[in-house]
Every structure is written in C-alpha cells, then in structure tokens.
Amino acid sequence: MPFAEISFTGLYLGAICYAGSLALYFLKKTDWADILLCVAFLLHTVSQISRGWIIGIFTPIAIVEVNFFLPWCLAFLTLCLRFFTKEKQLGCSAIIPVLFFLLIALQCPKGVFPPSPQGQTIFSPLFFLFEVPAQAFFVLGAWFAFQYLRREAEAEFFDSLIIWGFIFYSIAQVAGAIWCYLGWASLFNWSERHLQSAAIWCFYAAYIHLRFLYVRDMKRKAWFSIAGFALVLLVILLGHLSEMNMPRLGG
Image 1: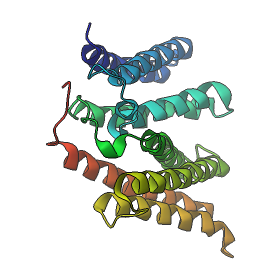
Image 2 (image 1 turned 90 degrees about the vertical axis):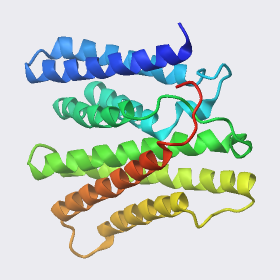
Image 3 (image 1 turned 45 degrees about the vertical axis):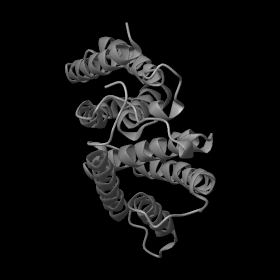
C-alpha cells in the first residue's frame, strides 16, 4: 500500500476511534475507552510517520506540518493527562479539541509541499517541532481554563499548560530566526507569517506578566487564555486558507 494511502487511511480511522473513545467515556466505559484511545493514537502516529514518505523520500517537514501535526500533539498531551496526571477525568474531555482540529485537518489537501532550498536545514523542522506543540499547550490551556470557569478544573492546571506553551514557543522563535537567516539571509521578515508568530508570542508574554500585577485574578487569566486560543485559532485558519491552493505532491 502506498504511503499516501496509509497516511490518509490512518488519519480517518484514527478520527473514528477518537470519536468512539469519547463516546465510551460518556457512557462510563472507561477501560474500553482507554483501549480505543490508545488504538486511535497508534493509527494517528502511523499516519503522521507515513506522511514523511509520501513523495518517496523522507521529508521530516511533512510530518510536522501544522494542520496534521497539531491534532497529533493534542492527542499525545491527552494521553499524558489521562495516564500520568491526577487530572484523569479532565484528560478525557481533551479528546474534544483533538477531534475539532482533526476535523480541520480532514478538510486540508493531504499531499505535502515540494521540498524547497530554504527548507534544507535542520532548523526548518525544528521550528515546527517546538511551535506546534506550543500551540497544543495553548489550546489545552484554554480548554482547561474553560473547565475552570465551569468549576471543573483547578486554577493552577491551565496556568501551567500556558507557561509550558510559552517556553516551547520561545524556543521555536529562536529556531525560526536561525532558519530565516539560513534560508533568507535575515533573522526576521515583515511577512504575514512572521507577524502572526510575533503577535502570539507577545500575547502570551503579556499573559506571563499578569502574575506580576498587584491584582492576581485567576478568572481574568482564564478569560485571557481563552482569548489567546481565539488568536491561535485565527492564525491556524488563516494559514490553512492561504495554503489551500498551493501546489502539493502526493495528494
């Protein structure tokens, strides 16, 4: 079976299994739900790895493409929350944002972008390897901030996710600057993509500094993190729309 077909099939089957796992959690069938969640993540992982071989040669940048890598990162964090933290039941609810972004991925062209001279550096995939997990932290931070406002999660929980997201995103900006210098001979370009990244970084830098204000209101921080999700989602959707008509290989 060609790698493209393996990747597409794994993505669709994974989405079905995630939905089944969430349904089983709602039905209180937690053991079966956990098994189906692991199966879904395995299929999802096979799909992601297969993307790297769609054009016949291994291209790591295809694996970490935002639209497809973000749902995988969310699923990975969901598994960690489910099995390695005290927030097990809340971890179950994190499947909802996984399915939301998988739905977006299923609407995207499934092929990969042709290799470019600017992408022939380790800092190209390294940038996405930190930026996309950071976005996953921001998304789940907003999700659990929403749960906190509903009095179903502890305040510190969403805050710690946002902080880890900011750390990952800051590392991504350094890797991105090096990639930009190697590919375009500049550390920063006044392009739409770079300004969007800068806007997200500045927004969450402001969030981090909220702790230094005299009034420390966790409800305001929760609303702030939800607003951050709106910003991240807008950037993702704008990127998705701009890439819809770009040439791709393998699908």
